[in-house]
Length: 348
Image (cartoon, rainbow, N blue to C red; front, side, top):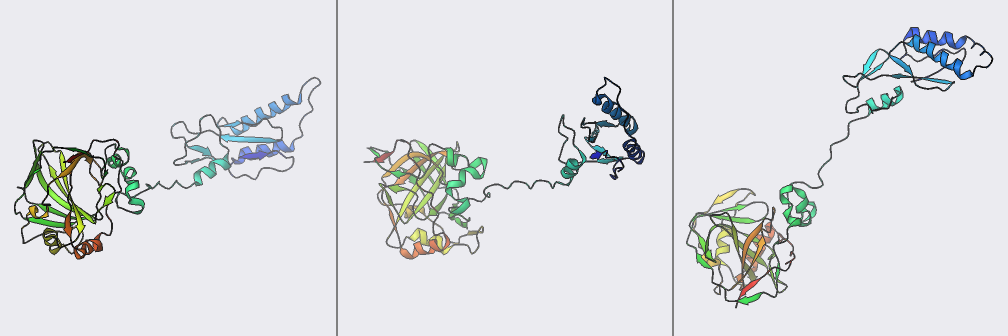
């Protein structure tokens, strides 16, 4: 607070103790004695400050040496950082006293009245999508566990070009009629299968877990994108993943796809057990040549180390079947990722 010692005008500030204010008034009315010869006027002001300090008490200090303005500064409590103002304790939550700085009362009052800062909101929500703020370009920033989506070096899908034609061992498909359940998980239509289906490739056996669909196809072959793709997801005993991609091109009705569509649940998130059985041999092309490379999941968390096998020959799917999926998911394909010099092999 600022107390001016204008002659004849006592202070009206109610935050100063009454006896101190009265003393200030008397001192202000009393004419200052003339300094003796050879003494500086600054000495007189120092004596006046000392007398005022005695009147105000040990809890107050005089901060300014300005002959016209005397500033009384409250000392903060050592335990809590609270400030004694006019016999009361003012506490400023969230505003600690600045070290080495004495705050005058107007500044302290402004700090006490300052509202708390609003909590920062994340730039994006936790629900990933294929467009907008949750789209693929933002996946890596949405959650720490999604960071590989933007920082990974072996991401999928890719445009398969210049594959090295070699003599690849054929994929051994061991599929059989199985019970299944269909779920619309909010990102695609997914089919979860009962155990007992597997593939063997490069001397390793992978168990089929589920398959799902994307529109349009995420993979491209020499720049060509297909109407849809089915991803058949497998896992071995070590937890390694292998995905078989079956490209779907506009043409005749696909019986396995139709069986899935016939068992679509009415609600998203609902997993519906099918009464029929399904044999995934009916989804595979007659020609079993394939491309293979190391990549990642095409959805968050975009984990790498996934063995990909993309069937070279597409399978037909009718326009009506494409239309049914399009009503649910007009577009659910991740953009093409950089091949980054990866080795791609293809059956000759």
